Image (cartoon, rainbow, N blue to C red; front, side):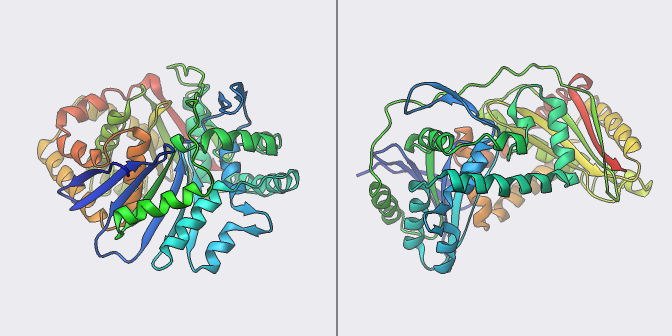
Length: 428
């Protein structure tokens, strides 16, 4: 019998139950009353920035090519004589997966065949099938995907900003890697990464929906045990080159065949722990609405002057190895808009926070979070973020309620010219 922990949010009228199976796998059940759809997710705390680690089976330090986490995600769908996507589809169940900088997650969505979907999702993860032939075939497929993204201005302006900020951290490299890097991937490397990072203590299983909590945990454990229940004795060890505080370069300008130029302004920040990552996300969400949304004075001014005709977005991204803010927009005259944004940031840094506006936006954000709890997809993202940041599930709501104007001022003080970069995509 397992011990079940319950976390509850009064504002969201929602509870999340969690336990750890005997093999070390963490299971989370987010109980959503009166929902017919159910989402199941089997994930690992393994993403594109992890390329240097101790092989859990040999104990030897191993370095692998960029893009291998994403490559592994693709290959796990392929089974001998079948494709898992097709098997889910025949059941009438939607399924997919994604890889980010720090996670890989496989999921299904269904209203009816819930137990069968759990069994299929476990089978998908627990039966890897890598051959020389299917690896070579996948190199061509992913190579085409990489080329496609290289022609996407939204993608390129973002990653150019990361390349300008970071000197050594793999966050500066496309999650899919490069055509050169994936050409060196072998089936042996895939098995090494799989055995290390798809071990139970590094994974989690998450269900969101109106389900019987104990019965669902039983179903998950029953299917996991079909593939053995051994707990690896070795903790996972990864290595990351120390990232200098200094940025790589001040500006990257790239020419592409586009209609409107695109701009990303980035600020490289000090690393934050899990709770402060959540806090920074809440702060930047408020700052974005206060100072850059379509309701802000600044956007209205830039729009009325004909400089921008789309939104200006401000976002924070952080993990245990990177931390930054990115402000992005499209504009007719990208240089003028960049100058205006930088001057505006220096201006608001030195002004007191409008407390009345702050309270309005903060209440708005809390309201949005409450409304968003009606979305199963947003609920699972909250839980996965809490798993990766090693914080309680509803830390974001508690943190948002506790944010003060002083927190905003302290955060703005970090946005200095020394750690600021610009990425621009302009017309050929």
